[in-house]
Length: 141
Length: 113
Image (tube, rainbow over all chains, first blue to last red; front, side, top):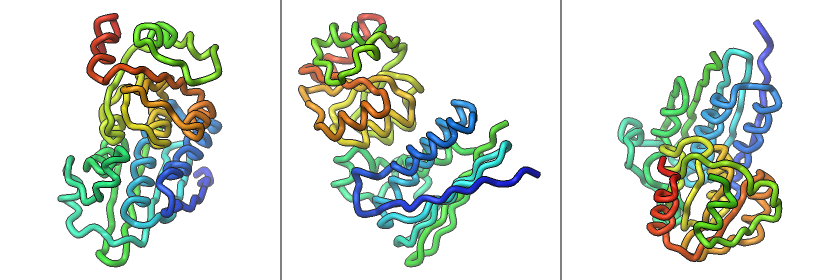
């Protein structure tokens, strides 16, 4: 088995304007490594939504990317308020984002559904009051 | 349809400085002020038409490999937004037209998906 490449990014929760910077860097990395454009797009979109969520709901967190030729795994971990009802949160259109976030173009209740749509496998682990960890897997073949 | 033709049809100001990008061809368009919907529904490489003006509009376009953004209703991008767009080779246009008219003009001119 080939060795895993691992990259870590801190997602800054204080500044909405900079949200997405880790996804931009990951997109660049994946391009340099020669992954297919379709895979790169899926990873970037899903991770971007995750990053936006961490900024909106959890004051930031950690993003870890593990790559090998077969798959890319993105682990997004925050210490935010947690998700009370994951099934409900996964429904398109359900959102707990404040109004000021909607005026910025997000908070339409599409974040988690989009992450599921663009990944091959998605796991959400969350404990109220402790935080949320989302693992996204993207297969390259 | 090239970005140059789109700018002409919409009487739009070209805010970006790299004129070589204006010859890029666009085959589809997506209009929305809601970036989550753009991420959910827009085809890759589409033209993005939006009345929302913040850096996340550029990032959203970047994630979807969109070559051009048209800001409607006379919105003029800030320097910060323009710089972010230029870093990612995204052309920024600004038209005085509203979203509805912008979409109608481009659709009628053949940009119909």
